[in-house]
Length: 94
View 1 (cartoon, rainbow, N blue to C red):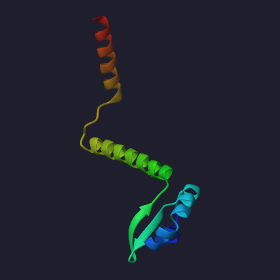
View 2 (view 1 turned 180 degrees about the vertical axis):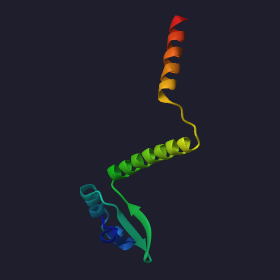
View 3 (view 1 turned 180 degrees about the horizontal axis):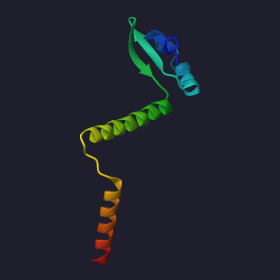
View 4 (view 1 turned 30 degrees about the vertical axis):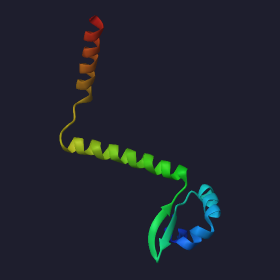
């Protein structure tokens, strides 16, 4: 995706707001709004925004998992499963 084709000044936003909202739903590409020649805001379709947030959440989970591996905070799956099965058996007996 080329963002250079999706850059508009704030005056364009003011005069074409309804058209911009319609186009966001159709194209799902973000629109970059500039003020005095500087990028100031990004307007994005809600569906695309939600997808971005979900992607960020998954990336944070992956980063956390990677850090835990690096810190040695991992256990062998078979050991954990045995411990869970044992605790379930013990709690069922009570």
